Length: 220
Ligand SMILES: [Zn+2]
Ligand SMILES: [Zn+2]
Image: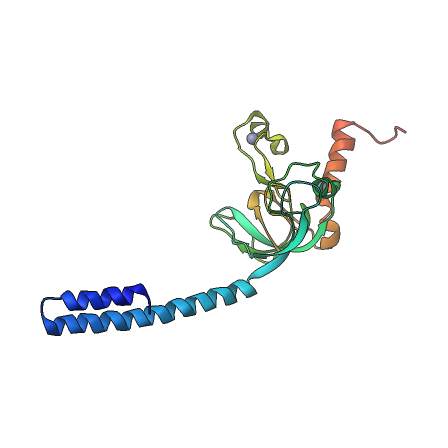
């Protein structure tokens, strides 16, 4: 019996008519007993759901050398504009090794992994043009400001306030990952998801070779 029950008894004693007071006292005591039971059931239920709705994740737990652990964490839910991806495959990038050695900026505790392909299993409000079950890969932005010069020029990858998946926002080395719907690219039916997880490094290579270094067919 909690403190509320004593408060109920006290209220009963100070009521104006005896009959009404006893009724109030009885009602309050009953209610308190019920609410204790409800609270207990709610706690049992939430620990049960937490058990079933949790997932293992490879996480950087603190800055410094190492500090990478497999941890249990709750399944995420998509906010407006986000989708929930069930990860099929994720690549281990050189960046992940730099993160292990603490040579790359992170915002721990954070789930690693940013080369990813999987299926859409949940969508937040306002997500249009995608549907549950679609096979997708994701770009690596979790947040960009949309206002800096780079963002306004369509170069979100250079945003000064950028927070990336797998270093400053939870990433793909787990079962479920959140990503803004604006990051998504559909995976063609003929491409398996394991290969599709390497879309981001492939895009980096193509950009580097064809746009930055301007290597053309023919030169050796
Ligand atoms: Zn990478
Ligand atoms: Zn920006």
